[in-house]
Image (cartoon, rainbow, N blue to C red; front, side, top):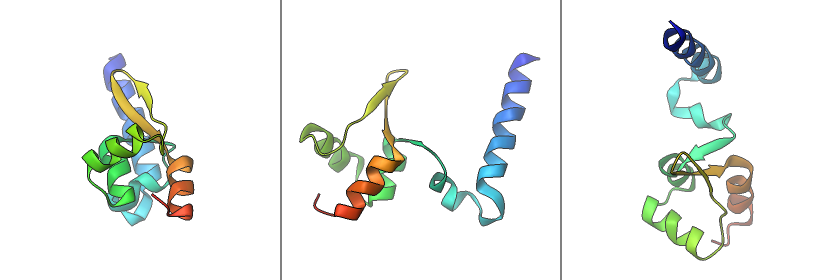
Length: 83
């Protein structure tokens, strides 16, 4: 029962974030983005994103063995646009 409740809460959160604009703009309100989402936001490949990490341009955080990127830091990178 607990799994169903967690799933229901996550879907409610998803629908409140997505709103009427749909899932295409879903990551606008998220704080943490996965590698694929961050690459899509930056309009780069995931490999290019990993190169930015290696060069020290972006700082990833690791949760559960996966890399996540803070949305505000990616927005700052876009604003400076020197990547």
